[in-house]
Length: 88
Image (cartoon, rainbow, N blue to C red; front, side, top):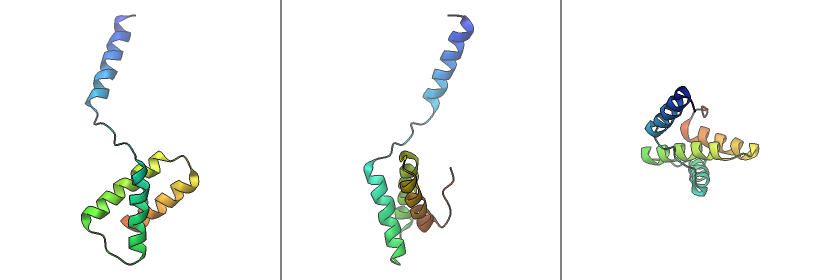
């Protein structure tokens, strides 16, 4: 292994260690997202904390699913909660 290759590996490993650990989606994220959207659609008001939690849960659910139909449902829920489209 050349010194240049070794230095690149060490540099990339170091950069990876500096990045914050990504939040992993859970099965409950979809439920939180859709549940909050149902509350909003029913006319209930979410607290700031509930809205922030639901927005994060929707984002994780959108990122975690491979189903186009589920992505659409989570994006619509995100729109109902945040009042804006999800930004990839």
